[in-house]
Image (cartoon, rainbow, N blue to C red; front, side, top):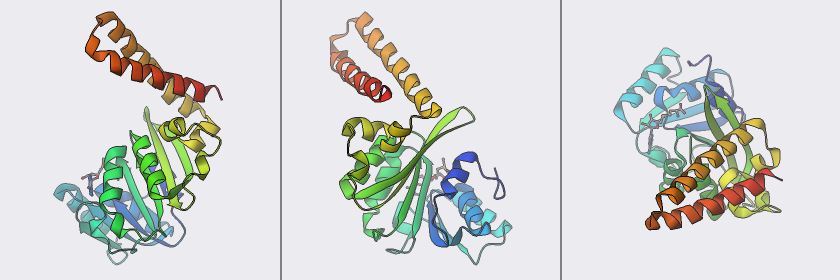
Length: 236
Ligand code: SAM
């Protein structure tokens, strides 16, 4: 991956950045996404935020090498603290777990004006983000699931709005877990992901049954409940 050729995952993320937006990429190891977005004329300017010294230095070096020091500010700090309130019109947070992305959003709430487009790409745990968006009044406007190099990724796009709307006519728990748009689309990657999860969960249930461990009964019952929810959603 480089600033001319992004990974498929980040290239797909870049397609959701509104044209001419000021982009903030949080957790911007190497600053590939902001460099690409500015170079391709997608974003007008960008902020690359990074909390760890090594990746922060890599981001500075990449921005310099790409000749975009005027357009891209590289800032060191935790999550959204690198931003002034309402400074960015698009915020990307990619390549992390869903619980970390959720924490970054929650701890940085006061930096959000509510006019931003949030483009979030969790590697796992997308359900934590969906639950937070729903609680905080952000409406999912698009979702994508894709596979690259044997790994499955999800992309969630949200704007302030009618947070419950995408969940109308769906089992809310299933839709938070699996994604309201993804459940409706049911593409091959989605089916692969959830069939893999089902196989994994069924194996755990079987192991608990064989072990006879009383302390794991609650866990087994919760897994059986989840299996039923996911099976039902896959049968839609
Ligand atoms: N966003 C890039 C991508 O998708 O390829 C890099 C992903 S890398 C796995 C995650 C990056 O986020 C790391 O460089 C890490 O230091 C940074 N990071 C983790 N927590 C952060 C936080 N609270 N604030 C800013 N950066 C963070």
